[in-house]
Structures are given as structure tokens and as C-alpha cells.
Amino acid sequence: MTVAPVITTERLTLRPLRLSDFTGYAAFLASDRAVHMGGPHKQETAWSWFCNDTAHWPLFGFGGLMIEDSVGRLLGQVSVTKGLEFPEPELGWFLFDGYEGKGFAGEAALALRRWVYTHAGLKTLVSYIGRTNRGSIALAERMGAELDETAATPNGDDCFVFRHPAADEVLI
Amino acid sequence: MMDLQIPVLKTERLTLRGPQARDFDAIAAFYADPERSWGFGGELDRNNAWRWFAAMIGHWVLRGYGFWTVETQNGDVVGIVGIWNPEGWPEPEIGWVMFEGFEGKGYAFEAASEVRRFAYQVLGFETLTSNIVPGNDKSVALAKKLGAWFEVEYDNVNMGTDHLYRHPSAATLEGMP
Image 1 (tube, rainbow over the protein chains, first blue to last red):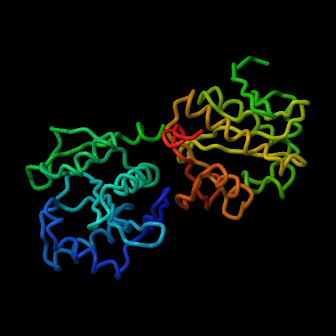
Image 2: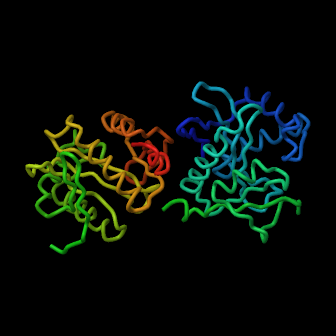
Image 3: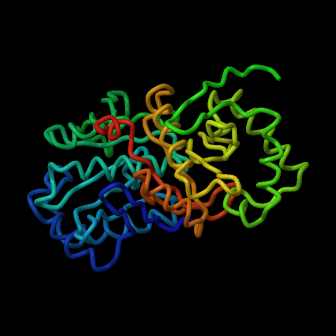
């Protein structure tokens, strides 16, 4: 059974979810910022997602991690999840209000991508991104991901599927 | 001995050259000393040290990179430093060993800096790690001096519980003098 790891990057710490993170997590999903994730979402939905991100670790060996900066501020979340509706494991990210534009999401997502390729045995990853979510599209492209028009989407949604460089391309 | 065409790297005080048969006694002495070798796989007798030494040379053939022997200008063999990525390793790492009597002089830092430069600028690596057994404080200090940071604890096939340090990327170092 995999225990969620603590991963440190140059500026960030990625760590397992704690119950005390839920308030901020639910507030984000209830806000307009969650529009690209099918939101705003009610607290019940936020709770089921929060438990889903946590339960992935023992079930699949990958899952969600909260992003903290060097002084312990909660910046957002990064995750690799394979919910029932996902055709394949997805690398996703979100930042709370005020923390965008500093490269934090990319730094966290690159570290988690490398970790799951190295330690969870995944060979490929996608990111499902809303067609108007320009920030995440730009980040996926900066990470070397490319649009995969042949890949299935969750529930047949009309979203973009960005496919990341494969494990054997990232791990030389 | 067959010429593997291992490049010779030079720094201010050191020469990094391909391993030669004459280096074996120094390797064997290192591995015979449990106090020195515990952070590098642990004590080996002379026969098993030879196997490791042969694997280290074979690593050059299989991967195109590996450990260099580090010499001073007067020919003292002070240690080995290089890039190591055997089967089962999470990803390529910069590794270092200083032999008895040659620590505390900054040789490992000088050699590892040059190896990293070579890996990024010539071999085309974009990132590098160093795997350090928890408690190997001298190596942690060197990793930090090189600008690396603790990334994650994981289970290494050979070392058991291991700490992975991540070096600044090629892109980050490019912007530095």
C-alpha cells in the first residue's frame, strides 16, 4: 500500500491532504475560479472529491497532494487521479486565488509527474482541460504536453486532452 | 586495456579520467572499510569489490557515462565521481566517493560541479539527482553546497530507504556564472 509521499521542490512542498485543508479546498471549489472544473461546486461535491484525492493513494499508488510554499502557506493542489469517469490517469492542478503567475503550478506538476513516472509505474499521463482554460492550456504546453485528439474524454465531455511526454521521454 | 574513449575532464586542481586497472586497490580499500563504505552500498570483500569495479567500467559501455577516477595534479587518486544509473535506479544521479585522507579539501565539490556541467552541456541531461542514504551528513552537505535540495524519500533497490536530492536543472544553471 502506497502512503502519499512528501515531495520537495526548489520552492515548494507537496504533502498529503489533511482534514484542516478541507475548508480552503471547498471554498475554492465553491468559487468562480472552479468554473474550469465544472464548478462552482457544493460542499458535498467538494467533500467527495477531497476523499477521492486522499483515497487514491492506498488504492492506486498515486493521488492528490497539497502545495505549500516555504513558509507553510497553502497555495493549491496537484494530483494524478483516475476517477471512475476518467478514461486514464490525469495530471491536474489548481492554485488558490493570489498565487497564480509565479510558476508554482508548473513546478508542482513537473515534480508530481516525475514522481508517478518513477515510483507509481505509470507510462503516460493526460490532462483534461476546458477549452477556455487558457492558463492551464499554456501550462500544459510549457510542460511539453501536446493535444491528443484521439484520446477519450471523461463522460465524452467536450474538453481538450493534452498528453504529456511519456515516462521514457521524461526519465532519460 | 581496451580504450573506452572516456573523456578527460579538467578542473583547477583535478583531472577526471576513465577508471584504470591500477585504481582497483584504492577501490578495494574503500570497500573494505565499513565506516567509509556504508553510505555507498556497504562493506565488500576484495572479490566483490572487483565485481563492483567491473560493473562500474561496464556502466560506461552500457550507458555512455559513468564514474571517473579523480586525480590531483601530482597523480594522487583521491576518489571517484560520476553519473550512475544502474538497473533499478530511479534516474541518473551524480555520485561521489572520496578516499581516505582526501576529504575536506573541496575535491568532491570541484569534481561533481564539473561532472554536472559536462552532463548538462555535453551529454544533454536536463536534470540530475543524488541519492543519499539518510544520515550520510557529509554527502547531504555537499549536495546542498551544489544547490541540490531534498525531494523525496523512497525505497532504493540496493540501498533500502534512500533520500533523493534534486540538482538545479540545466536551464537554471545556464543562467548562472
